[in-house]
Image (cartoon, rainbow, N blue to C red; front, top):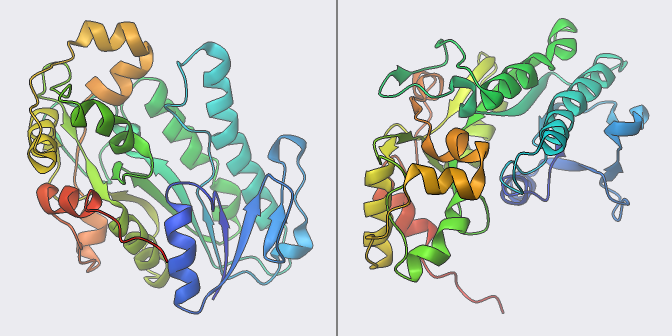
Length: 303
């Protein structure tokens, strides 16, 4: 298939693109930087710049681009940047796709389990209502921004990502240094659920959604065994063979990180991947300990 990917150099995109290419798909990359290769297409959502002609005849669009949530404290200005990089950019892309003579059959767009907000021990699936808070509102509007594509008859899949396990970036990469130094520990009460997913299963789930034409709407991209922060902490410490005795009380997390602490670290979302399971997706890493062992295994040296 001819596949267009935005966010191709990000945490997910950098794993997805080589996987798609190895399967024989032709991959075009939407980039905000200067196009360096023939397969690169430069776009600038803030200026509404995107060469329509280059998108004609694309079979699938996988839209992963968006500013990193944990890049800095959530000042009013940065929250606006987060909204613009997700909601405005997604709407512009979808409006452009809807105007093509030959629009893609499928749009697979990123979202997050932040959609559900802080829900304690409730078991959540794709039919659960949205929560409250900045992240929940952001995810709700982010998904709604796909409406121009959906209205044009494009099959739209909204991927609600959990905490992605990769040593190359995201939450796990940030946790490794303190844990390796013996400074890791439970955050807040430790009772909050973290819905996690191995990076291999993120790539697998995207490809599953590409080929299963009956899948549309929200899809939880999380492993079937969400863990409490306490269990996550103890398992990570065990895999790294390090103690986990330095807790981070909630007030310290809030002092250091502000509002982001409540929404990313202290809130609880016990999310189940019902749509993936119902449509026959087989998880490579359904359990946390094997997933962490694989993610943190020494990488073979490149010659």
